[in-house]
Image (tube, rainbow, N blue to C red; front, side):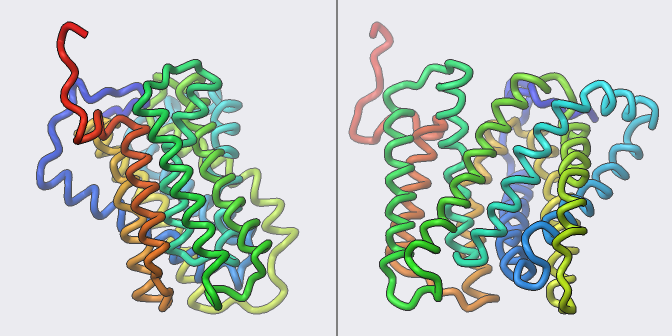
Length: 322
């Protein structure tokens, strides 16, 4: 089966119960990635943890890639598209993963998973500025609402008494790093659309993860921790690489193939639920009303900006002659 980045929902089947279950599993895996980052980053540090994550993920995806098509064909595609694959590897994996890891030195897994939900907002904004994609009034409203939700969430974290040992400035810097990561995701998505359209998504995933590994490996060697690393941290990084990167990417590409990218991207709305749930269950993280309110506002804004919500419920349908 070939999975292509320029696939559309035209040939995809509707989201059935099996696809919906797969979507929930994917959201659970990606929501858990914030939990595992939180567990592993203290022992490993930012660069070593993320280098191991992308390295394990790259190895997994390369094995799958080679198993699905002739080795020479895969090598040829990777070689001819090496530069854009490296760029996307930096923008979509190496840099944002490190920024999220830095953020989780201060912020909870639940909060960072909610900030991650703003990724489609940046994608729409970057597409408007860079690719001149048209923004309707509804999508513009979605951007405003979504970023308002981010501000609500960050303010809740800064104002909450005793929520973190970090100073308000440290909390703001951590939130800024997480937002920077989602901005890079938005740039990467549009760069991919411009320079890698037509390349099957499995090749893109394997190539970009390999590029991210090449970039982060020297930093991992330089900043490798001098103190012993706990078994919990090793377990977290293995889970990050295999389950939250390799398996999750495979599942995501499958959903793109069978249900279409528009339906597959709705996983964005479910990830924060699992991010908050796993953080509360396994790390004892508190969930404040302000955090839930910010999450809700971000998701509404994202739904408007991505076109999931076509119109406001109190506005009647558009007439055909308008």
